[in-house]
Image (cartoon, rainbow, N blue to C red):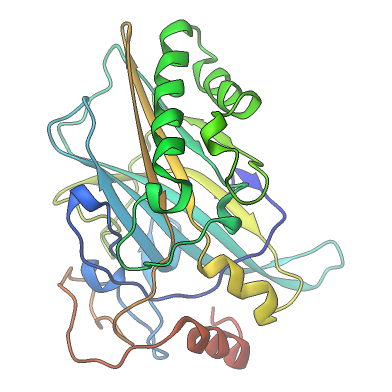
Length: 302
């Protein structure tokens, strides 16, 4: 499913695994949720109509439910026919919201803002344990949240999500001026309304760390690299997408900022079945560059 298109560097197949606690917002990957794998030991996590080759999962607390919600970034690979009638490598970056069975948005408005334009320029020196503050700086994160919550208090119409996005794009906090690269494209998606949270089939792979959670596809961004050159593929491996989740109920607006990336696996394989299992220890680590070379050598496996 494709919601928006962006022209930038694009990612490729990754395995991922990093254990974490909620407070540090570390990322979890396929080793944590037990992604099935193919004969090449590439993850095959089928969720709805998508087969994810890599994931990055984090969770965050809200005032809407006593249990945390989760965000999952998943990478889907396919081949699509271009304008020249040639098959092209196509990569969709899918963002899924995970919600517990008790989650309700009665009398509330929910929005998600995806800061995709800045994502390729954000990096962190600690790939296994980082927060948004490590990539944007503490003051930028704090001021973004404060500005979003203040903007939400004065916006009450049906165009809440777009106006909230515009307020952050048109007048970003001065503390964010030092962020590397252009602020760029910010995508707003509604989380409220009858068609916003469509539960997906997870019978073959559960792409969330929440026990019994539902997941819904909220945003998808399509990339079509001109080639499989490492120069084009590598930058996206370390791209970090800030995602702001905003809930407004009455006059109270609360915002949370999380950062998602496709994380490198600590293992060179996951598991051969779809039952969620914990990470396997003692398996050789495969580097991101090694995974890139696998993609370059074998091409896309459909």
